[in-house]
Image (cartoon, rainbow, N blue to C red; front, side, top):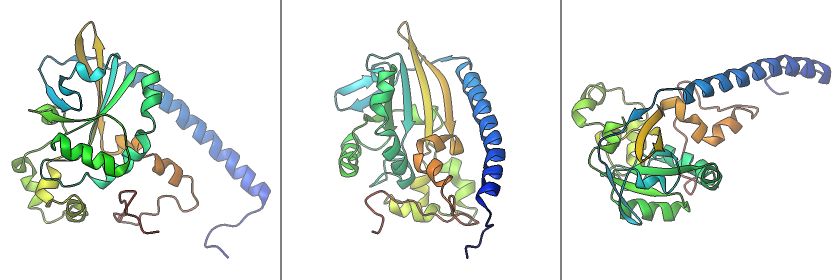
Amino acid sequence: MPDHTIGTREEWAAARAELLEREKALTRENDEISRLRRELPWVLVDKEYSFDTEGGTKTLADLFDGRSQLLVYHFMFGERYTAGCPVCSSGADTYDGAVPHLNARDVTFACVSRAPLDRLLGYRERMGWSFPWVSQNGDFNTDFGAAYTEQQLAPFLESGNLGPVPEVAALCGTDPAGYMTEAPVLTAFALDDGAVYQTYSTGARGLEPLLGYYALLDRAPHGRDEGNPPRFWIRRHDEYEA
């Protein structure tokens, strides 16, 4: 007998109908939040940025690739990494396939990291992805909250409470200090009359839509089943045991 409430089909249908009302309310609230997100004021980006790309050095405006909207995912792949962050990599398995659909809606999607371009492209080939990936020059990731100095990280690193960070850092070929200099962020930009504007940014759990498997796990019988406190289980898709 499963260690769970067992009921009749009629009891399940009644409970499901009650839950459906809350799911519908959540959907309506999400629609309202999406509207408010679109109504945020735009901020002019008047600093010049450059990126190493497969097509040579480009500006931020160039990354729009002829479209009026740009989504940039600041992928955690620092200069001291030998491989990309496994959590960022798990998200890439979701959004890699979404790129053509975004393009069809006048949205360009690109990942930006601080590691050299050849290392990024080599890793992309290993993982079987095709999304645009560029290497930033200068302060782009820092300016948009996706990079930190070791001095900024010192209080956390000296706390002795690093959680799964040492394990994840090792998976990236670096130490906790090298790993934590990078942060995952999604930033949205608009291009209007030649000017670039930042329109939105999110991190932490705001990035869960990029981790498509979580929405599916949330609907599986045992949910995320990550433990309390959560254990780190995510691996790159070519590293799971059969």
